[in-house]
Image (cartoon, rainbow, N blue to C red; front, side, top):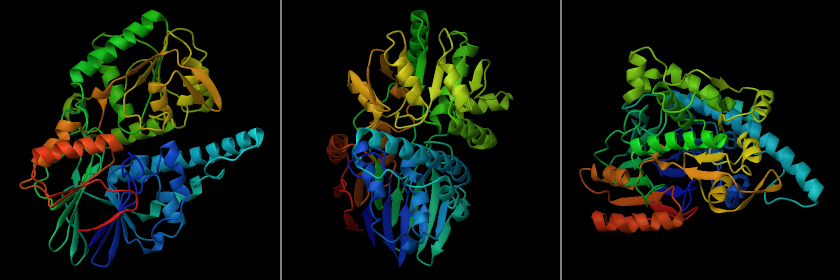
Length: 461
């Protein structure tokens, strides 16, 4: 039995792990590389013929875990894609949106390169189209949490709730003599709209995410007060609050917090725009699967109150509506995708606000190395849609709203095991962070083998 690491190795995107067991090829996650310096990998020949893959197991719908599906289907995959029902529905929305952006970005890149007389580091053609994305959907086979799925005489799979986003999962693969656990992305213990991750007791082999393996998140109460203060200060300064927003889970959680602050009269009642067709569609999926929600949101639902609606909230569905936002006088709240500013409508709002000292650019999620979001956090000048802009707006980040487990919560996930795993593989983390995390795990737990795999490395398990 072997595992090959095809992504999320010493970086945080492109999650793909190929497990070979009992004559089956099982791909756990099928994500896009999103860092600028790694995007070319999306166009490289896949290390195994897609037609030879029997199953794809999706932990959740974020594009760094699901966004390569149209390409792999286009290249010959004919197996089954197993995931929860909410994951299937949200992934369909995410893939169509991604495909449209692929087409738009390729066309813009082609025109820009023709004008500049040069070629880019990866092709001026889309990785896939909306038609390719549609071709994926027939292969989905939804499953339920905590049910054994038998895919051969010697292999069973169980999906557990990971608490990261709606429908997200920890995957356990049970063979004759091993229990192999893929954490996917782990969520927080105290999420106001989702239940905490399930406790896993047994894992001989553990593949664990390490995104925040170097830090502890601020408490949610502190994050909430910081959110309140930043909004009030920006309104006082006469600026806009621009929030690059992940369409899946983060958008819904920010809507929840805005509703709470407004209902308690802690912030002014501002026009608020959710300027992301994808986030709007995903919010509808949240409404459909209210039974998957937990915590404070569940209490609202019991009182027949939607956690995601409030006065002056406007869903900007069309491009025309999006463009009109930047002509409004006075302060507004603008939530737009993408969360790391790698594409989508957020770039136009950044152009309108990043050189305004009175405006606020507020990050509420992880900004991967090599993304525009990370550059805005670290640089005084950034390139947006081919032009350079001075970073004059106030730049802030609130990590207390993160849907990723922090270092302590990752340690707790390991500590919940009855005995340490025989082998631990650390993935989905930047190199410096992951190495520091590995050293701290060595000090805390008696795990005989801890690995930080390289891209395309393979291990016998």
